[in-house]
Length: 449
Ligand code: 5CA
Image (tube, rainbow, N blue to C red):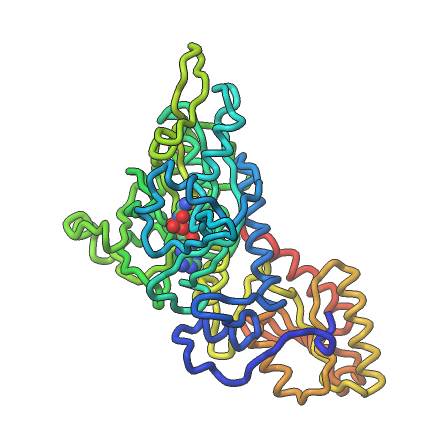
């Protein structure tokens, strides 16, 4: 992509109303734009990152055996009356009347709708287990939307819903999502710690929040330090191996970890002082097992092996991709801007032409641009006539993992410079060597987990 032809509106100054660094940087880098309180447009740079987050989520959901579908944002109130949640949900639900005065709502979550789809089609235990997920916009009329897309009113959610014949099967479905989440967050470059959680309006008695530690997190969290060194489950995990998966989940729940509403000071006190971590955290995912809370009132039953009807056991599993983008920035930035891990970067390389209009420099920059793209790297070419300082500042702000800098002096000497955004390390190389080095560096970092 050529910067001169791109819509990438970068702001020099920090917007006054943005309190936390991810919100400030997302506005400054031209990733998002607030349209109303808690409602954001995703501009091209932001949307690229969001797309990468979604893709990694999909890969890990599919690997764990979940299937993607897409349910609508607008739902009928009648569906929610069946579960009894229509009145219970309160003011967070945006209620709408259509032209026939039918009561509708903008979905804050989809348990009812997916249960309705399930009961229409699935009639036999042979079709179980089943896990259906979608990536869809949600609306929750939060009392205090804040911190940009971290706590917004309209936000994207990946929500998955599992259906099983009994509690044991549902436990395995829960474990599959638990392990898929560990892998998903690791691929974002995040250390997410599963913590026992309150179930709130979703309900049920087994639930974990996946929390990343960050100073700006909304919740106070307490956990054992050793969590930070646990190895992520491998890509070749066998999701059908019930006992192996149970063992992984037990390992990841064996040490103390709790948010403040579930905190047990006595249990925490038993951890040696050198192993105690008391910090703030951001909830990036939340999983629930709630048995027959929806299937019972909504009569989602299948025929069991003995021919008798069985009410299915359900769980639901959420990740907030829009919140994840902000959380990754909270975890990975410096004074100059964002530092994207390669798997989420909007472009892998920022190619800076320091002297646009100089024939030789243009020639080399354009040649490198074509060759990098041909090698399969995604490149943003700064071919604008801005001064060098401004170009470097924008590149650092946008956080592309590698910069390739082409200037007239270097071109005369047959050299270009590579800068790694994260370490600031610089390397002067010939054009060909720089191309090879960049290809190697990028491909080594594409898969994090
Ligand atoms: N139906 C269940 C699981 S699918 C559910 O709704 N869970 S939830 O309420 O915990 O939300 C799931 C995830 O959505 C959260 O972990 C969080 O990452 C994201 N999320 C929730 N509320 C917001 C919000 N206001 N802004 C941004 N992301 C949010």
